[in-house]
Every structure is written in C-alpha cells, then in structure tokens.
Image 1 (cartoon, rainbow, N blue to C red):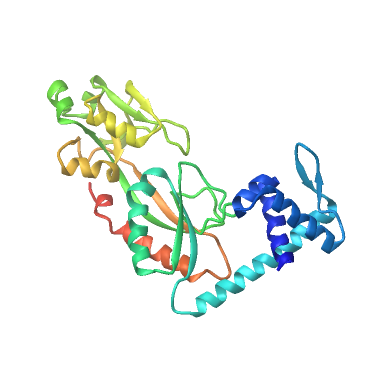
Image 2 (spheres, one colour):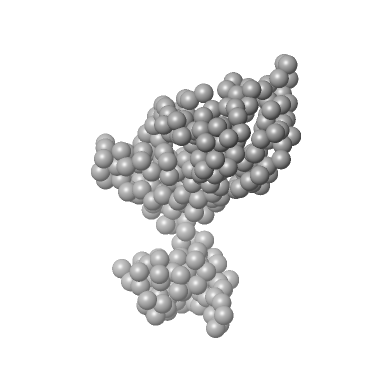
Length: 303
C-alpha cells in the first residue's frame, strides 16, 4: 500500500507543480509528501525529482515513470467506471463547468434535483466566466456559448436565448417609450462586453428586409450581465439582455420590454463532454438530465 500511496503523491506533485500544493490536495503535510516520494524513489531505485529551494522538476527517469504511472492510473479509473456502469445505478463524482449566469441561475438548482434522484453521485461545480481546459481540469460535463471553441468535444446545442431590449418603469416615465429604432439614439444605453470575445455586443435590428446595426452612445459599459440588469433596474438606461436574464423581471413588471420583435440575435449554449470510448453512467445521466431541464425551461422560451 505504501507504494500506491507514493505513486499517488508523486503524480499529484507533478500535476500541481510542488510538494505543498500536492500535500494540500491530498490532505497531508508537505513533510509526509516528501517521505512518500523518498520511499518511492528507494523502491524504484532512481531519483524522480530534481529539487532545489525554489522549484521541483522531473528527472529523465521521473518523466518516463510519470507517463507510465498516468497510463496505469487511467486504466484503473476506466476499469472502475466499467464496473460501476455494469450496475443499474449511477455512482461517483462528476465535475461540471458552467458560465456564471447559466451556472448560478439554472445549473445549480437543476443539480440539486438531479442528486435527489441519484443519491450515489457527487457533483463538483466550477462556475466561472472562462473557457476551462477540459482534459487538464477533468471536466465531465460543461456548458459554453455555442459554437464551442474546441471541436474535439461531444456537444449538444441546448439553449437559444434571444436578445431583448428592456428598461425599468421609472426610466420609461422619465424618458418616454421609444416608438421606433431611430428613437434609441436619444436614450441612455447600457452596453455589455462579452467575456468570450471581449467585444461590445452589437444591437442589431430587422429593418426593411435587412439587418441594421444601431450606432449608440452608451452611458454604462460593463462585462457583467447581472450588473447590466441591476443598472437597468435602477433606472440607469435601456439594456440589451438575453431573455433568460430578463424573464423574471419582465414577469414581475420590474422591467418593460422595448420594441419587441425587431431586435435580432440570441445567446446560444451547448452542453458538452469529453470524447471517450466509454462514457461513465454518471456522466451520461447528468448530461441527459441537464439537457432536459435547460431545453424545457420557460425562461428560455420568452420572446
């Protein structure tokens, strides 16, 4: 068992970059991690790491041993998944990644319902506005704006959330309701910068059989979609929002839709998972559940 423990520690040190990070991940002390590696080196008969006071690097023998160990560990993991999938029940931990808005508003509540039906599954959620390294971060199921930047993933388009313009009743009372697209140039506008492209999202309208970009001066520019909605709720201006973010406020009359049917474009998302020869039952189960939950959610149907 001490050799297995040493190999596990060795792999974590390589993957995390140093003894301290590996020890923290394994809930042991750095001194214990050092002992595990020393015992492993004594067992294999070679030095695996070059060590100095500033950094740790693999020796040539250590690099070859790491490659062999990861292949062996992956083979064991695949066999464990095969055995788990032979049962009728989904078992194990699933790592899920999603952008902040979709993750907090829709994925997290859906996972709560999923776990009530799959009591032997554990879920680790990574909710953040960035594109994860799916392989390195061991992401099992994720959501990203469509189309995906990585075409090697298995993906299913799940959400198409049209854009809409809206403002608070307070703003409409003070500045009036725009009656046509040209009126918008006289209003205060709230612009959103996409975290994917780092560009301002255009306001595009269907006019006279063609699509026209509206030139406007924004009083507020933000990279946070929730912040843009909050600014609109405070009466700061007109915001272009995806329907799923605006839907609760439209229903409660805290926001009023402006020029319905003229704005074009949507925010689309895909569910994805890694391309594998054998997909674990826990992954398949969560993928199917999230697809059903998100594709049928009423906040994505609002026009």
